[in-house]
Length: 478
Image (tube, rainbow, N blue to C red; front, side):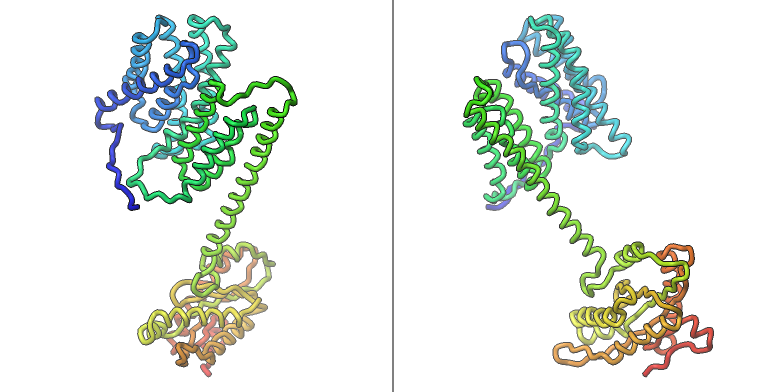
């Protein structure tokens, strides 16, 4: 099945104030009606999505945070109450408490965005948790005061009802609305991708069939599986649907939490399953984290090593040098190697042959250096070696060992012998009280200068400062 293109449509736009006002009024009225339909006893709602939805909209679209847009939202609430309830003045207080939650969450989220200097987008989930908690407290204080006039309950039960409802719906809805995006196209359905979602549905069905307090935890492993397999917006949406469904199912006794005895078989059965569900969830998360860490190690390995030649990359060499310790009197030799006339290899034999020569050359250099130093590819046909040596002469002898090994080695390309040579420039110095990286960078400049001299002297040479000072510009080619 081919993917289906989805036309792009934007509900809110900074340049269209009237359209923004219209959609704010429509969305407020729509979700107010949804909450009113879920009222338990014609007073307070079982599940009130409006506040969280509107808070997410105002937080997501910064330019909607104007007093007139807030007024439209508040006015739509009052108008709905006038048409559907007899609350009178109590409606002013109750809907003001709704606005407290909306405004507080939106302002807290926007404060974070201003501090981070980022565009509107998904927020850190932990911060949303705290923002919902703080906003729900203030919303519940005002809402409980206003509800006393329409409900015979005392302040504390009303406060607990308001707080728990606002906090739970905020945590469920805010991440979903703030990360929601419309796809550019609907991809073809692959049944293996539906397995986490189907497992989630089955877990809710199992919760209904088993009942008991432990059944509420049944969907947790399936939600974690969804989080691993699906994008963040999809996971947030599934979490919202699952959480809202469980609240409604419990309120209507479809999921039965009632307990007639402390250790009756059905209750113990549900408790055991719930504990097992909770216990396996950290294992799923730990397994996923281990897989992610393994992937990170593989990516790091690819960054630290050159894929073609299997020696260090430049960044990998720097990381390796950072991890090395040395004494103040430790001598360091840096060698810069350049394969002579490498372009002709590519021109005459092709780039595939060139890649083979680079890989074989790196193996020969690595074997020649052994444990005496680190080999890295700087780019193209240029390589660098950082070796711990006793003195400049030992460094020169190691460079000559490499040069002679390459000169005598026969590269076999499709049963055809091929020879190359290498020019080497070296830099020598002691570490002193400086970092190894600083010494390396200084000696690399020196090695580059003497590599130029080796090429100018006819290539297939090793050139070093200490030899030049003694009147010997370069080694004699064999």
